Length: 212
Image: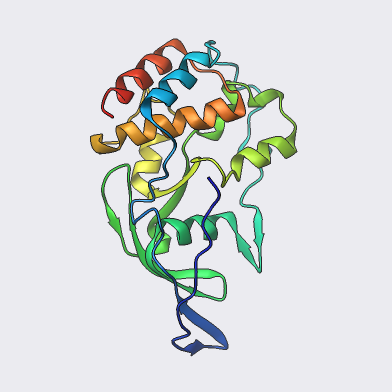
């Protein structure tokens, strides 16, 4: 799924030489939910993932997953996700300055981009433990900036901190209505990037798919 391009509706004013442009709401809605196939397809993909014990964290650093990458015109991947997942988003130049976001992890409504975290659905540290430690830095950067899979989502900072680098056997969104989508998204990312899962992780994902 390619990221949608936010379409400017009208120029409503100018602040210090920067045009303030309201954008159309994301086609995914304010929840930022990204379709990733049917639950049956996700279950099939899950069955094909390698099962392995977590790898070592030796040598891990977030710096080995360079982000946020430029997306042109002084924009970066964070800007792109904020625009995609928000409603009534406004930008000054390329910077998101206002809007509303609903965190799919905990249902909180956020009214400032400063309160929004862009979460890696499959955390960078989890990816490292499940195969990314052997990748090149360029490939890890591609993973950390992946806008084509459901790997990046706007959420509340508190839910992002709560999740940390935990997999679904250790942490699930408090919004149970999001479990189906979260499991499908997690599997979609791991399937594309050929990352392994633990036995406990697979069991938790299977249970979450039953909510679909």
